[in-house]
Image 1: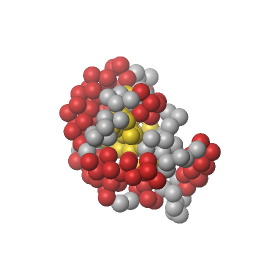
Image 2 (image 1 turned 90 degrees about the horizontal axis):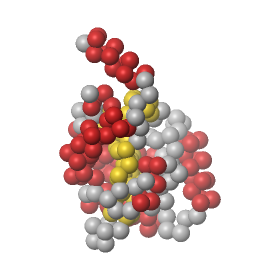
Image 3 (image 1 turned 180 degrees about the vertical axis):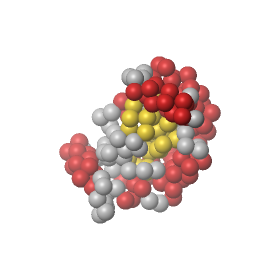
Length: 188
């Protein structure tokens, strides 16, 4: 066991590229995520937030993101709390728990890249300026982004993030995105 832990520590001390893990991450996406990621409850949650945020401008998005960052780690977090509570957040946490440690986090984003629901607090609210959103929602239905393996500041684990566009099943139009953090050691 000690040998495995030492080998893992050495492995993760080296820079890792997604290419080394891409086949395993793609298989995980197909086998463990795709079946539920575009489910009716996820679609409904994203559509509801899109309706609530219709017409939101970049200044408001930046203001929300600044407030979120200030609330991270504070006991009083009126912006963060609704994203982490309720049936949708509970459902995302259930997926993380059911993964047996393979998933580290799950969060949903609306059409602006703002968090809709999350299993755990993220370091920021606005994902719209990041590849996980730009390479999925920004590129349309069927788009997937797999990140590099790195130490995630939110989870404090070496992980890759698998992100994909969420579509309205009635129209096929992109409505948001989902990101699932996957513990890299679980792929070894």
